Image (cartoon, rainbow, N blue to C red; front, top):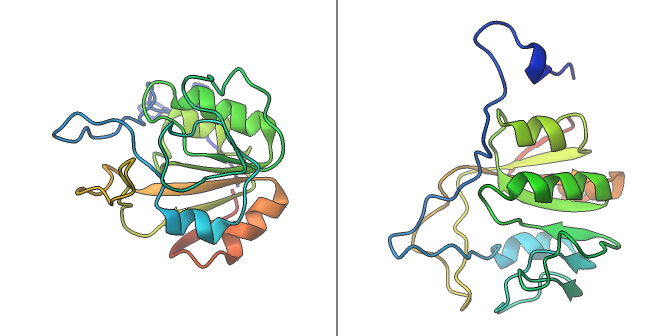
Length: 177
């Protein structure tokens, strides 16, 4: 795939600045959302979730770091699940995931952003653009009342994780970037 270098884009075209990954805030101002459990089940077992919620009705991985641990500063080992905080910090988490190179991330499918150009296009091994919009879950395990503010994509780093996305059975379009 030939990629457009954001720094040398034709006149009028460039990667969007800013993270592009803010959630549309729920009416109650809530910011903590959990990955739907059926997504995690389809993807298999993970060794680490470096940005896990403190309260979680289901496990995302064998080991977890929460915001209190600052998972960006901790060692990452094994197969990582990364549903990062959406917003200004998303680029830092995605760079760390790309550098780690073994795992799957879940972010908004904002393909025009600098984050996508820096940490996904030309770096990731596979993408699964999920059909429709996800309904994330509350920390008590109940499904959120609203769907996500944008479409979502699962991003595989490593060939084994690419095979997982190709065969997981989740509804969407698989792409090798």
